[in-house]
Every structure is written in C-alpha cells, then in structure tokens.
Length: 238
Ligand SMILES: NC(=O)c1ccc[n+]([C@@H]2O[C@H](COP(=O)([O-])OP(=O)(O)OC[C@H]3O[C@@H](n4cnc5c(N)ncnc54)[C@H](OP(=O)(O)O)[C@@H]3O)[C@@H](O)[C@H]2O)c1
Image (cartoon, rainbow, N blue to C red; front, side):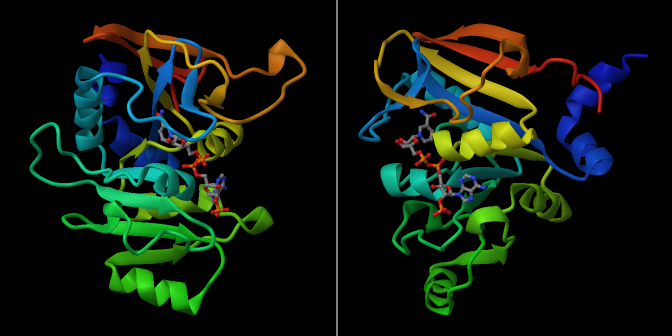
C-alpha cells in the first residue's frame, strides 16, 4: 500500500541504496523565455525574494549543493542555507577540472564542508585550496573533464542522498546529456531576457523524438514567480 508515496518521503535514501547514486535535483531560475543569464554572465537576480527563499528550503533538505567552476567565477555564490532556518549546512561541492576555484571564493567560507571534484592534478593549486578548507577528490573523465557518473557514485559513498544542483548552462547541459537528472526545479520569472544563456546547453537535436520529455509534478505560484517541478517521463520507478 502507498509504496510510491512512502518512497517519496525518503526519495534520496532510496536512490542512494537502490541505484548507488544520489537523487539529482537541478534548480534553475529562468525568465519566461528560458534564459538563466544574460550573455555577459549576469544572472543575479532573475527571480524575486520569495522564490529565492523557497530555493533555500530545497537546499536545506539536500545533503549537498553542487555547482560548476563557471558559476563560481561569474557569481561567487556562497551556496549555503541562509534564508530559512537550518540545523546544519549541506556540503558544498564544486565541479572544477583544473582546480581553478579561487581560494577567496565565498563558498569556501565556513561553516560546512566543501568538496572540489577535479580531473587534473596540480600540487600547487591543491595545497592552496586545501589550506582554504576544501577537500579535493579526483575523478578524471573524457576530455580532461570531471567524470560526472564517477562523481555521483563517490557522493553516494559519502552518504549523499539528495544532491541539489545550482550550476550554469554547461554543467547542466552535461548532466542532462548524461541522464542522471531526476527532477527539474525551475523558478520562472515573468520577464524576457532575450538572447542569453540557456537552462542546459546540449544539442542541437535533429528530431523531436530525441528530446528529453518531462512530466509536471507540481506547478505553483511563489510570490511574483512560478515554481515548476518536472521529472523525466517514464522514470517513475527505479
Ligand atoms: N539562473 C540560474 O539558475 C543560474 C544558476 C547558476 C549559474 N547561472 C549562471 O550560469 C553562468 C555560468 O555558467 P557556466 O556554464 O559557465 O558554469 P557552470 O556550468 O557552473 O560550470 C561549467 C564548468 O564546469 C566545468 N566542468 C568540469 N567537468 C565538467 C563536465 N563533465 N561537464 C561540464 N562542465 C564541467 C567546466 O570547467 P573546467 O573544464 O575548467 O572544469 C565548465 O566550464 C553564469 O552566468 C551564472 O550567472 C545561472
């Protein structure tokens, strides 16, 4: 009875134990035309305060919050939980092949653990980032980039149940292309950005049959914005 509902209550735990990887929730703030940033990288803030507060509640329920080094350079986010009360900070994780996270990056500031996944060793940069408080793990993949599947398996071994992704179009694109995104959490603002960065850079596709089809699991208004939650169609059970 109510097996699916019961599983929802601990969806990350079941994902980790059954699939050996966390439940991956990709959070984005987008305009009505689906842009996550202007072409010059500016994205703060596309959505309003209520949406950002709601986003922090989703960060809070995750074991780890993940971003890419591109976002660290462009936005210098703290990636912690601030806008809602929390008894603990999720681990902050950066995908950074060449260890180019600046040691002054705000996300390195305590409290909470910081883990950087890299692909190319560099003794000098490793020492600087370790001194700044980060742990570094190497998961080399194709093209000198981080192997995302190996990273997810490693996060599961570290006990991460829910992984909250807040990255830019490149890392989002790789995650969508490689298939581990279980849930899209999208805050949509009623504004148009015109030419800009997309939610996830993948494709171009030639046929509509090849698109990633989703189904809505929730549509709600949060302040002046919409909160849309969608999951890949046909993947209700794993
Ligand atoms: N609106 C939103 O919700 C939102 C959220 C976050 C960011 N943003 C915006 O996104 C923009 C930054 O986007 P971005 O695409 O440059 O940054 P990103 O997606 O956060 O990071 C991309 C970087 O990750 C590294 N990486 C390592 N392994 C990878 C792999 N397997 N696949 C893909 N990337 C891998 C690559 O750099 P290396 O090769 O050097 O490792 C790559 O350049 C900014 O304008 C920011 O404001 C918007």
